[in-house]
Image (cartoon, rainbow, N blue to C red):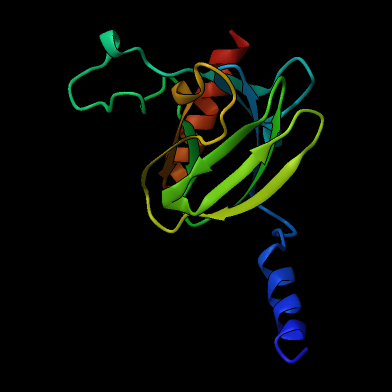
Length: 165
């Protein structure tokens, strides 16, 4: 009992999600790619910041890109900002995992799981689906690029302009 009571408080505080995050991103697992929705920038159901992220095939890699880890559309986030990731799946069990950020959250069809992230440094962080979700499960990489706030604002503006055209 002496260990249990303080442990419950610690476990509860570790699972606590930031009340008012600056950015909310929804990751939807598909066989075998990810879809990302930045819901904070939706002006209507028709215009939202949504994109798919596929692994770049080995034949299309450029010099310096990592095999089986590089994607065509990275998740761009502001550094030093509280983020909320909402994670779900459209078909089978997946797991959105980025070990260098200390994040691993299961994507379950029909269920929304959430986790908080605070990235302290700008950079590129790699991860993969860590659930055995089918034959191409190893080909669902995740790339999170943390940039400074002005660069993030410029990226959002560019994405919204591209999607409106």
